[in-house]
Every structure is written in C-alpha cells, then in structure tokens.
Length: 101
Image (cartoon, rainbow, N blue to C red):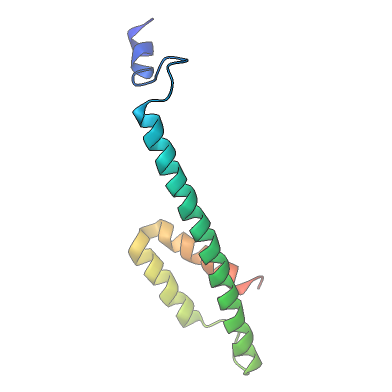
C-alpha cells in the first residue's frame, strides 16, 4: 500500500471490525440533525400558514397583499444573523408565505 493510500484510510476501521467510537458519535449527531430538521419543517409550515392568513386578512380589509417594508425588515434580520445565506433563507421563507404572486 502506498503512503498516500494509507493517508486516505487513516481513522477508518478495517472491514468487519465493528463500530468505532466515532461511528457512535456520528450516529448520535445525525439523529440530532434529523430532530432539528423535523422542527424546521414544522416551523416552516406554521410560518407559511400564518403569513398566508395575514395576507388574506389584510386583503379582506382592503389592504395590499404584500407589505414591502415588512419584507425588508425580515430580510435584514436574516441577513444580519446569517449573512448571505440568511438572505437567501429569508427570501425562501417569504416566498413560502406569500404563495405564487
């Protein structure tokens, strides 16, 4: 085996050696990620439903469907907290809440 091959397999358990402590830690962290993902999905759906209800109430009262100043506040909050990715996330949240324009 070449030295470079040894470098690529460092820390990898031999086949049939059974789980390592790292495997257990990774499995635990992945389960927590799955829990977080479930929460995000639930919150995403709740947020979208609330936003759609607000838009419907606003329109029923003679207002506009969108309030651009409010959308700007949301985008700034996400951008300030999470940077460029936060801005993209904020845009996705707004789109989910508005539905098709």
